[in-house]
Length: 506
Image (tube, rainbow, N blue to C red; front, side, top):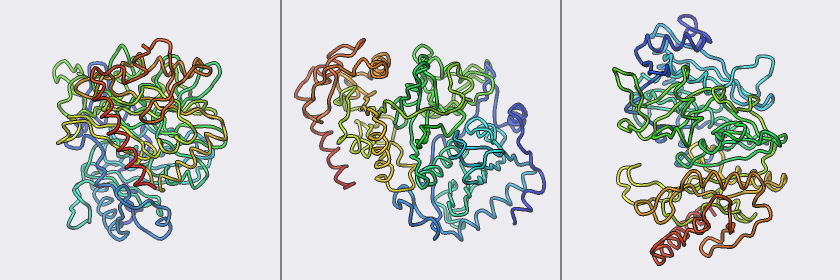
């Protein structure tokens, strides 16, 4: 089947969000909550399927790609054959939603994308997550996404690993997604594209959030994996929010790739995360895999019966303190977030120039019991550049670009541990959010510029002796453990894991 035949009939082009809301309910794939937010369920796919993601291996791009566990090759002929099947399937649905959108707030460093999908709520998701197209501004690339979440692949016929597939053809600038209704596959496919395209243009692509001081406009970046606090810390009532997940850093500053937020909302706190909580309940938001009472339509953010990875998608415009341009200057402060479940890393440390690249390439956090089958004790997890699943080029390329920019613009880089204190997971407790915010604010307000620092003995990290609003013993994790020998053993264990991981990357 040809693409021209596919687009001849049944296209619902650039429908408004209101019409997409109505269509999603008519299609019986979404329900209204008591506040008007749209509630959807994507079981059994309640998260990304990294093993079902492939890059087409072809001559024009293959020499740029970091091939391996993250980027596994897919034959070009198999891609074309499956694309024909997907196009035929979409044409048979009788209606397809087409949206032309934009990824990137920068007038010169953005791509135009056209989404074709069978699902109204996924089309709505795309209009939330990406920015409106600006026809008078020329994109440097244009990509097309063919999205068939309810089409199931046949692995024997199609060459996929399972019924689900996420296939990127960077040479033809096309993406096929099917077999999974999890909306994050759309968002992260485009992030993968930008991780390929932008570094080739001299722009660093980053898995980070960003905010700015409303008066001085000084920018802070927060790198981190899911669950470390990247979104929570960027959405600060005292700061202007530039974006909460994906940014570029070019010669004239940083810019957001997106126009919305895809926040994790399991057990969200109205007290400690008011901006996300309020935005998630508004009419116009999408609640993905959040449990809702079928009669009262009340949502229950604490219920994890479907997944721990419950999400809320909403436009950044729902927030009262957003920077509408999606842009900011060069960052004054850069935070590397980690949720250390071993409970041995200090909650705040200023990295030396020599440590920046190592900790960026480590991309360390820890999984805890209950997040994966078989995980009964904390498990160290390493994701280079704090976003390995979305990298296309080798991690060293992004790390070198970051170090060069930090040095050129005089940015300070900090390690911020939002994990456990007083012991490991199961013994200690999670670092209280008010303490973490106090540390971030102290850095941003310059309160630590002339402060005294001391070097802890296991990782060589420099930690402040005092931070306003934070007990001094919390800054020194060994003082919070009752069993000092157990702390020393865990610290040596984690340091050994760091050395082993860096040795693999050498």
